[in-house]
Length: 409
Image (cartoon, rainbow, N blue to C red; front, top):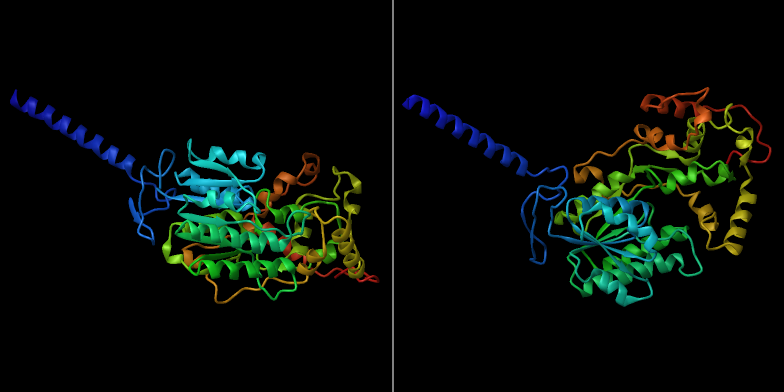
């Protein structure tokens, strides 16, 4: 009888141990979703941050991050990454309709809105007053009736940095641009370069991030390359770049936010392969089956080549009479002549323990939504990496044709 009871006691003890092990396993933090390696973290100014939870919903990192420009392509992704594991996010906004979709990225109270205006210093200060980290994604590639590129890229950076400094924000992350250089011929690249210097004057230990042109769903790069109606693409798409994955840039920013070893450093985030915009547009043309049966026949005629002199005048007219529209302007023309240059002194993805994605692995998945169903009746090609590389070789193969008007610029 005694052996029976002892056997039952052993079974109960074994079950209890199993339950305890299961609980401990469930409580184990998922390091792929939670950016912090410790429950207790000390900021550079001595503030103590306590992390709570397993790394998903209902978790908290203890940090508060203000993301200026959260409604943009990169801003939406980084806000999602921060909010999903409980980092409190302050999302300053000018247009409430462009920000409302950010709320669902975190639990109730995680994503918080605050109305701001570049000309209202008090609204900027209120947006950073309780932050531990400020990420500045604000920038403009054109001069509008309200703000010039200098206003957005230089004065905007200055005012946000000054407000953050006034309220003792620990970290400031300035997201700049590839080719940022105060001496650049392009107004956009020059103002981005000056913006970096302005931030460094206020925050000597600010982290500078220069992403290459980013690809992803709803990215500006794809919106530029995919449309059929393009006048003078042979001129405007001359630039050569190292496209980078937008999701990876956001992941890198997330690492930088919680890693104080990145203080005062400059990162250039770019892909492993160099592409010209011209070849990318040609590749996308074949992927979307432009000019094939099942598509409306006039489509191929909408992409009209033009001489450089004509495009220069066209860009000038656009800037003169339509300055606030997101169309080609003189700075667009200047940037088309400036290839991406890598700064050898800047850090890269590898310094963050990451490996850059190759565009060939992702291009088709992002282009596919632009393919309409009738165009697939004769061509159902699924472009994997090998097919994309073959297509790249094909579009770069020299074609025999006359060029009386200098259209192959």
